[in-house]
Image (cartoon, rainbow, N blue to C red):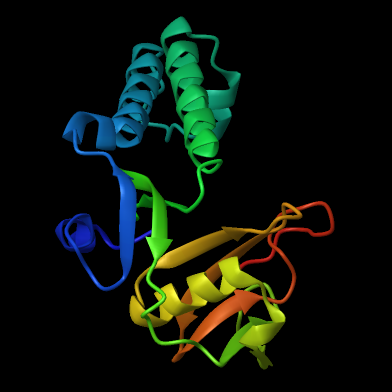
Length: 193
């Protein structure tokens, strides 16, 4: 995930990554954003009609709703999430903005970016306690993410290893940081940074 203000920069030739398959149509790029806004607006309309008397509408109302319009939007979000997951089967990264605008897939992080010798491994869920570890103890996907986050401090990389473990990588307090245990996967519980 890159900051929204970097969209034009990464779509063009840049020193960070090259996107093999770019999403050029703006409506397609912003499909997830559009679905989420429609879903929230529909939820507000549905509960506005039910005389909710100014009570906040949230997750509980969404889950409890049996409105067909919400069910259709929920299914569309689910289908789009599956499409995004399928894009990861193409070699390379899927590139989004922090606002979930899909920029492309099959992206390769530049090998010309400065390598990272050590990373901060988070020892607690907030990443307040860390230990420094040598980046060579990680695989190529992780080291690419380390290089990218080292170059683009506002970026967040989500790395799925070959054994399907998931780690978040982020620049934090002067170092590339990753959780000590995978955030998701067979051998983990959720841990953040």
